[in-house]
Image 1 (tube, rainbow, N blue to C red):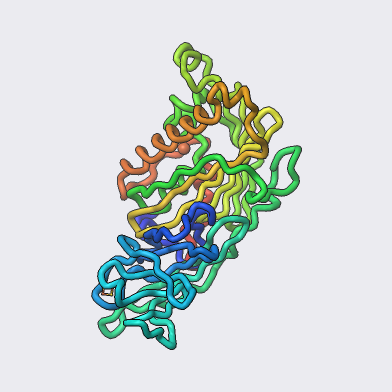
Image 2: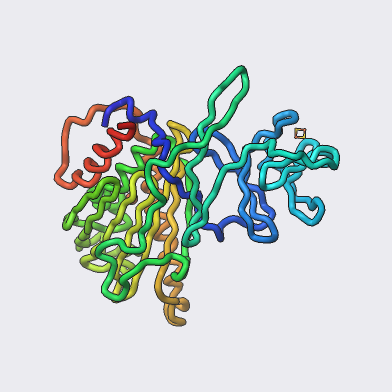
Length: 351
Ligand code: FES
Ligand SMILES: [Fe+2]
């Protein structure tokens, strides 16, 4: 990994801001993408709106304290500072003292919702004549189509997240460039290191590794530890002796992991986007193709499985927040290969 690549934000990639269902109606939310803040809110009609978060009057933070009003039957966002006088529509038009602007004044962040996920390419902001102005970013990659990922499971030929049962969500900002979580996600070896107390892995094996431009797929086989500590561990029951996960990565933003657990499909979707060169938002959403049985609920299996997820995310986040920003790679481990393919691909981003 070259030092200068760690200030890259990979403009031109599509970024997933989360599940459409995770945005609550009329609850403005702040997101930071590619160094700029936006306010996102879902209106009563279910439209998702995203605008530049800085109020053009006196610079209020629209997401922090902004509230929803109605203007001629349309829902609008009121500024937390002078919202009695200034409100915003989702198309960027602004209502000032009851008068609607004829053109958009507030910059809109364009969004697309596909299979229940919210995507954007972001905007490029620069200073021009003392003002901050934005321009669209030319897409370098399409929004990932993961419906036909290889090695799905025997029971599924196609993957549609909208048709699965969503069971888990966690999102976190980590203090590092996006390259570090990408490395972590493509690093099978960390299951036996970082996650020694959760996944109880003795050994891992990587098979069927294929790369096609920004798409990398591989199978990760984890062999469970069998020592005394592992046997006593409360996670022991949640893990099989041999587990095969299929990982399908769409660099740099999305990885879909599928696991055939006793004939049933468990899907983990890891999405990430750069908030800034030094801060990355990482999210995990998990899905199942089945409902838990009554006896599994009685044994608190769903809660236990989600606690397990919380725990291993905590392990990843701790590592990611404690990496040095600069280093020279001097040694290589056998299972570094998927991570190295990912790093090599991203090193030539601006080609
Ligand atoms: S700061 Fe927003 S209207 Fe004054
Ligand atoms: Fe991990």
